[in-house]
Image (cartoon, rainbow, N blue to C red; front, side, top):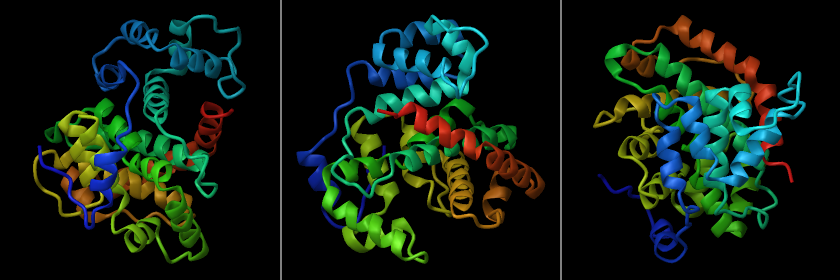
Length: 288
C-alpha cells in the first residue's frame, strides 16, 4: 500500500505522538458495514455488540425524523425501519467519531460536517450504481469511503484546536478561500492528506484508503481510481450544494465513469431534495 505523503511534518508529528484509537471491535464493524452482501439480520447481530450504536439506532428509529407508526423496540426492527443505507452510514459515523473531541474548537460545526459526510456517502452510492458495470464499483464500499473522505478534519480539530479555529475562521471570512486552501496555508496540508493518513493508521481496507486519500486528484489513474473518482465527484456535488452554487458536472470524471451529464444532473437534483432531511439526521445523530 502506498504511503500517504504531505508537505511539512504536521502529519508525521500527529502520527507519532497522538494516534487516535478506534473502539475495540470497530475495524470488524467497519468491514461488515462495507459488505454489500450482508443480510439485515446478520448486520443487526453484529451491531448488537456495540450497545451505544445499537441504542442510538433504536432512538433514531423512534424519533420524529423517522416518524414510525408504532414504537420500535428492537435493533432488528430499527434496522428494518431505517434501511441499509442509513444503518450503515450512522453506525460508521458513530464508530469513527468516538475517539475525537472537537469541543475545544468552537468554530468547528459538527452538524455541518456530518451532514456533508452523509450526503457524500449517499451521492457516492448513487454514482456507483449509475457508473458503467465495467468500473466494478461496490456501492457499500464507496458509501463508506464517501462518509469517511473528510475524517482527517476531525482529527486535526481534535489535536490542533487553536490552529483549526483560525483555519475555520479564515475560510468563513473569505468566501474565495476554500477550506483546503486555508489548511494548506496554515498547516501545509489538505484535508485528504490527513484523512488518508488516518485511514492508513487504522488499517482500513486499501480500497477505502485509496478513495479517501486520492478523491481530490482529478488525474489519479492508479489502482482503485474508480472509487476515488466517484467519491471526488460526490464531494464536489455536496460542496456545490452547501455553497448554493449552480451545479456543473466535471466532464473528465463523467467520461471516466461512463455517466452522462443528464444522469449527473438528476443525481444532483436528488441530492438537493435530500439536503434538509440529511441535515436533520446529522442533528439527530449527534445531539447531546
